[in-house]
Image 1: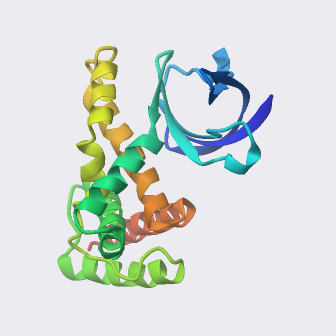
Image 2: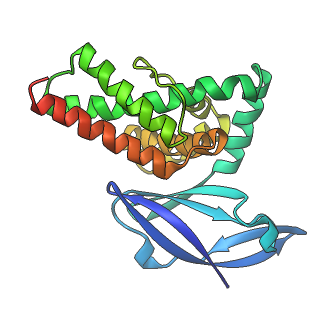
Length: 233
């Protein structure tokens, strides 16, 4: 038995979970199983990232990742490693990783910040004046540089190429369609959350961005937007 550390996003809260694993071999290939218990299955939706060893020795530990979806007693596992590899292959074909990485870091992080700002604006029922939003982005750009997230932000950034690749990934589309049969009424919400989580995990790995730092700048974006709107814009 080996314990593996997981991070779970549940109802907007980050929690740390340790799982026990049994390793076994199938047709000469190493695999890893997880010991699920009833207490881990919630009636509310949760998404957990699991890192596992593709081979039964510690040198290869944490090379692969899976997204574990739980909702209303049902579990489905998505192979993030596969989606990531296919995304990298697609990017290499379209011009190469080096040329892509700098621009995507700007676009991906800017899109996340804009999402946080939009959520706050929705709560207040009004938008932030363009000049105040530009000031907000300028301030956050300084933070992004210090925290080694990205050197530049784009106030108009919205369309991440990583997210586009994830949304069009054939494997993921097939898995989501299977999941939709169990939750037809919630399929749009579930699909969005799974796609966003996969894209975020893959982008952080490919762009070498700390998810902790990313959450920090998202929180600061929300706080600043809230202060601006509370003060009347």
